[in-house]
Structure formats: structure tokens, C-alpha cells
Image 1 (cartoon, one colour):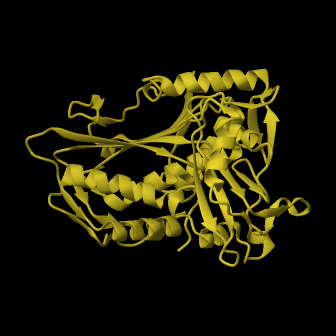
Image 2 (tube, rainbow, N blue to C red):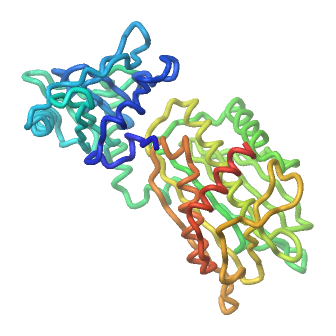
Length: 414
């Protein structure tokens, strides 16, 4: 099993983890290059604190010591010579970081013994994207606020330093989430022809920690609309003429069956989606459709942040609200929604509607994601729906089977 160095407990680091991550046994074209979140070093670098500072001030990253990279081959790993595994190697490296980086950066460290050289080790330092920026690299009379650009550590400009202070203030604010979103509701038709806010909805919001400063011009609107049409193919009729000061909005509506869906792109880079649950009569919703909507929303967001070269942390807010007249069916659609729905294996609901004594049941999940969660979001999605189904429907869920179904849905519907 391949373990992700960005996520595993580094206290359990093994040499096999290093082999798999570097791809040293695979063809060169399949090996990871040094980048904004990855730095290879054959020995402990003299300016290690500079690398740590740059990662903490940018998107976090991995510093791997004991791996040789070839600059002539775009800095891919070509050898794992490792370094002398002195008993105090951990404390030596920790002291080197803490004595040259201020304030203390958020990091963890793991050591793996080389399989063929018992006296040699590979060291992995994982630096988190910091909430208390800016960090400064201090070496003698040299003080430097560094950021990571590509595979290099560079001096931060005055504007970038101001942004680092703004990030710290923003993440410390209690209004970090609520202040970045405007009210978003869907509406359903009343018997007298008027409309009312629906208590039946599924909402997903993805927020980058750093504002992406997207200019809401015609180019960005066309790009966003194209992404929505590409991913959400079942929504044939879209109204893409909703412009606001902070966001651009696309809607899909059919008042005859209370069908209402909205997608928003904020200038900050936030993506928000909301959809009616239980369209038509009787009001029934297939769990698989909600899962696919979540997958597609994450894919749209991932495409956006990739184009903006953003690899920082993301805040996920996932919300489900269901009224008592709506039935949830543990059904999974086939590829591209063609054919009959099949029961999702491993999902059993004790009740398929909410408590009849209550008018609505709303449940919200929040998660902090890193970029690996966006690359492979199945686990995050399975974890979110597991909690929703348990809280709202008293579900008995086999997590592994639910995860397997979500992986299948993502593979066959994207």
C-alpha cells in the first residue's frame, strides 16, 4: 500500500515509504519533480531554515533529506544515498530549524533507516501552511521573509508581506467563513403561486485560505460556465446571467417540479453550490446523485485552483437540510446517469425520512483540506456522507463499501 507522506504519521516513516514516494524504482518520467511543495536534498542544507520559512509562508511542503535530485532532469530524484544516522539527528535538525526560523513554524519530522545501509537514514520534514505568518529566516546578520515560487525560495515583496499579515488576521477571525459567503438559498413554489425558501437542500462550499483575487470579467465568467456545463451535464438549461459585486452566479430552474440549483464563483476563489433535494412528487432523492454533485463541485474547484497555481489549504463546508416529507433512497446511478439505479451496497438507513415531529433537519460538516484531499477526494466525501447519514437517518454504514462506491462513481461519471 502506497502511503502519502503529506498525511501519514511521520513517527511510523519507513524506507519503503521513501521508495514509493520518490518513485526511484520507476521510470524517470513517473518521478515527482521539485515544486512549490517539495524539496529534495542530498545532505542537510546550510539554509534549511530558509526552505522551512518559505514553505510555512506559502502552502506548506515536504523537505526530504538524503535524496539526490538531478538539476539537469528538472530536479527529479535519481538516487537515495541517505545521510549518516547519528543518534541525535532529530534534535540536530529540530534545533537548526528553531534557531533560524521565527516565529516557530508548524512542522513535524520523521526518520527512516536505509534498508541497505543500517547506519544511514532519510529524513522527512513536513511543514504545514502556517496560520501565524509571516515567518522570518534569521542567519547571522541576514533576515529574510521567504516564499516558495516553483522550486525556489525567494524574498517576499512588500505586497506579499502585507498579504501574509492579512492571512494571519483573516485566519484568526471568527468570521473567516461567514464573512466570505453571501446568503444562498433555493426556492420552491407554494400552492398560491408565490415562492418560499426551501428547507430541502444540499449545499457545498469550498474556500481557499488565501484570496485568489479573481477578476470577475467576461473571460472568468465564460470559463466558469464552461466548467459547470462540462461537469454537470444533466443540467441542460442553465441561466448564466447573474452578476453581483462579489460573485458570478449560474442557475438551473424548473418551477413546475421545484427544481432549483445554483453555482457561484466568488472573486476570492470560493466555489459554492446548492441544489433542491426531492424534486417533483413524491419527493424522493437518490443518495448517489448527491454524492456525484459533491464530486463535480470539488472537480470544478480543483480545476480553478490548479489554474491559479494555488496549493494551499481549503475549507470545506458541506450541508444537508431535509424536510419531513422527503424520502432519501440509498440508490446509485450508473455511469453518466443512463439506465436503472442500483442500491448502494453497505448503506442501510433505519429510517428514510426525518423525524415526523420536526419540520426540517439540517446538518453541517466542516473540514480543513490540503491539496492531496482535492486530488483524491473520495475519502473526504465518504467521511462527510457517513456523518450526515448517521446523524439524519440513523444510518448503519459500512464505510469501506461506501468508499468503494464513491470511487466507482467518480471513475465512471467524470
